[in-house]
Length: 148
View 1 (cartoon, helix red, strand yellow):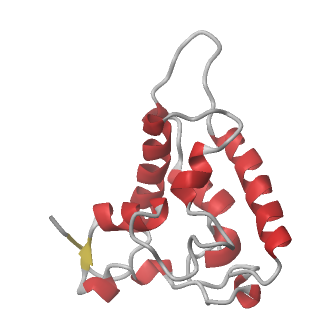
View 2 (cartoon, helix red, strand yellow; view 1 turned 90 degrees about the vertical axis):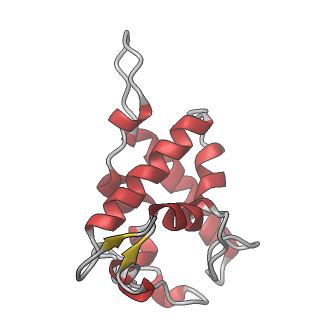
């Protein structure tokens, strides 16, 4: 991952604090999390620094990582054209380990979303991840078949 652990944790703290800007709730109404999360904005805040604005693996930190981030627009293509929202969710939240995600250098995003200062509950964490998954699906190159 990043050679300098303190730089990674500084980035994570910044991303989490900026992430609070992505959740807006009116003063008198309780909105459901799915109505409030925008996948492209979550991606920009949490993912683009490593994976790049275009999701091609060319983010501003990519050259400083131990493992080069993959091109996220080719997830389905690398899986014989099949898109599995469940598998991608598991990659983001840490249930399906990925080289470079997790471990001592960088926490998985499921855990990071749970530890935000806004006190997100499990439903909000799941909604954030679902918004990210939907956005990543929209970026896929080539024909995509839904995997059951």
